[in-house]
Length: 229
Length: 229
Image (cartoon, rainbow over all chains, first blue to last red; front, side, top):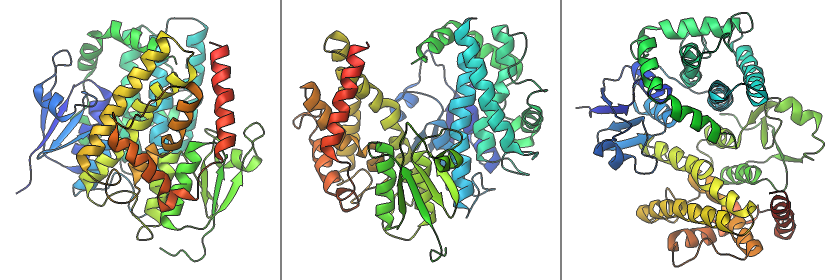
């Protein structure tokens, strides 16, 4: 008898998506519990007392927090196609290295740029984000996914980029920072990722993303400001 | 895995705690390697070739293939030399997830307030950083005490210990330089005991930085920050 799997998350958040995508890709049945971030449940606070954040995975009575930690856990605890390549330590190391890069240097930098008011600081952030995106672009090397023919760990970690178009719309950005001319492989990847059967089922719609972020727009500007350390 | 014909190099710098983390990991596995000291003001062509993205140390080069980012390197070492020496990550998936979670806690939540405390002149701001550091130390103390083991995941040095490791010699140095205690034995009995145990552990004790030089370096760092506040 397999133990029940619950995912506490906030639909619309790219970090919650990391965890959901992993579950879907492994074919794990789970119950999604939508958390109200303004009024966190007792279940969340009890099982993630350190960070009090989503996503949080509950597998039976075992709790796992931090989105990429959850992705690795799901990869290791359940049967199904491997997210991190098996039996190839160098490939696994490369996936982990680039995943950290995608989250910290691409998604995070783009996010900061989005919510920083126009000016020199913003221009610097945009330039930095584009330099980093170029490195990620090169990693694709004409393949469908970072993982090759199938979605893997790095694709899931880079999925935050799929939020960019909607967020740019919300922030009122004229021209995308991840334009097709400059980043053809990434844009193609974006199409492949967002139309994948398993992933599609847990990708929030444009409206859902808008709703999630519109509610916290002011907090985001403050958050971006506080990230400048 | 055939370990006969392999060549391992570690590019590092004598004062970097991340380099020591990798040295300790290699020591746990009993790996022989060539160490290359880098002058970070005059980086070698080899380093720039092996880590073009971040241009930092540590970089591990395994049979000519580079691996960068200390957390990634440590997991790589555990993968490649599986079955040799001690385990760095536990066997069971949930325990592995817990190890990864707590390993991240150190750079994400603990190190920032400690660094802030060390680089801020005496006064209200420094006191606030000290309090914030104590709060995070309390969380770690509870986790360590709750486990009831010699080290975080058992009776030998593992991933979390490696992540926290350098603080075992850095915190006492900071305390001496500032003239204020942080890890007081009565307040943090488990952590305090762990610090001594860690520094005396077989994979660590013969691989520590030159303490007097490090102390001088830290003094200079504090002076710089306080002066340029």
